[in-house]
Length: 245
Image 1: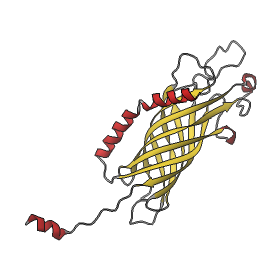
Image 2: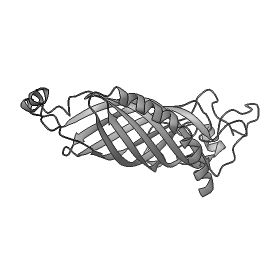
Image 3: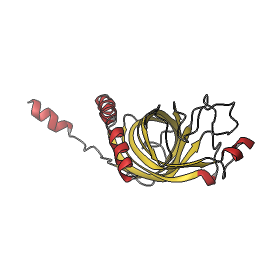
Image 4: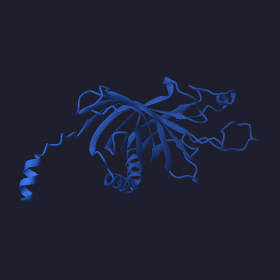
């Protein structure tokens, strides 16, 4: 399984040049250039044919590392790598009577590379206010790869696109360190996270799901961010006039 995870990670990172190009484009139009790095710990939650909603039983550990560029006081651009376990079980979280008969489960590793824009609702970094926190919304694009023990049909790839979006909360501990909390959903175009999708409904073995309802997954967690905050040095107008002479 270790080699599978490495192969998935390698495939996902093939898409990183696209993310870097978008990031460089954002930097060329930057207004207030602050950069940040950080990490977060939390959990992945799956939603599909085996599980619905949010429950503690189906949350698995996950972590993330990220780089953020503050394009303006309201908008930031973030590149992140996130990985962790994703699991579901008809036995632990049955959603209907058919689930008891199907009795399916899965346990996989998911690795995600994402790029998103964040919009902050309050002027939390403005020195003219006393506000040290802000809620924010984010949305963007991601590529994820999966690796697991269950057999997969040949008609799908282990690497798939997704649309991440969600909301969070940031708090300034000091000018260098920020604390954050985030909840985000990943809209996929894929129905095999749980390895359950279409099937022959005339065969009452219940080993199938709803092929018209794609799977989703969520990441929720806490993060700690370090900001490369710099205070511009004042310049003397007299020195400028002296150079002109």
